[in-house]
Amino acid sequence: MDISKVRELVKMVEESGIEELEVIHKDTTIRIQKSAHMAPGAVIAPAPIVMPAAAPVAAPAQIPAAAAAPAETAADVAKAKFKDVRTPIVGTMYLAPSPEDGPFVQLGDHVAVGQTLCIIEAMKVMNEIDAEFSGTIREILVENGSPVEAEAVLFLVEPD
Image 1 (cartoon, rainbow, N blue to C red):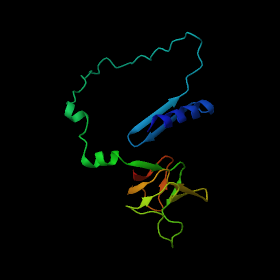
Image 2 (tube, helix red, strand yellow):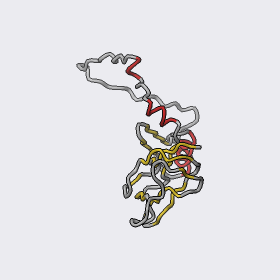
Image 3 (cartoon, helix red, strand yellow):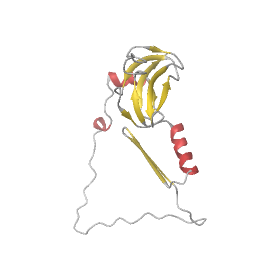
Image 4 (cartoon, one colour):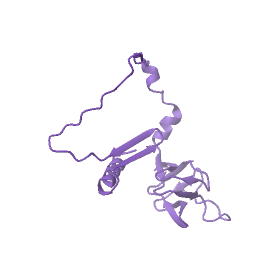
């Protein structure tokens, strides 16, 4: 998740009536919580940790440096150069305008800026998802007719 998206989330929490927001995407969790109103100069002290007297305290496990970070595979390196296309809304993804028609795009197709890639149906409204950059479709990550969450990655595109 890039920093601009995090800033958008912080702004959304600040401007809304919600007190806390947690977003989980793949292996990343972002939690934004409004702070309680405090007097100027007040300090928040951490809550004490209470453990039973009989509970043994184990030393933290040592993780070998090689095991701490998984080795990058050739596929990971290749995917790093791809840009993702995400859905801005929750809904059902359709790869074709109707069941009788062919898909908007297929694996390996070259797409141009503004070209329709798929449709997300949300509350009986069909929302076209258009390419924001030109490139080649390298992966289609969601099956036709599948439900998607907001910000779900739909396509991986190798930009021109």
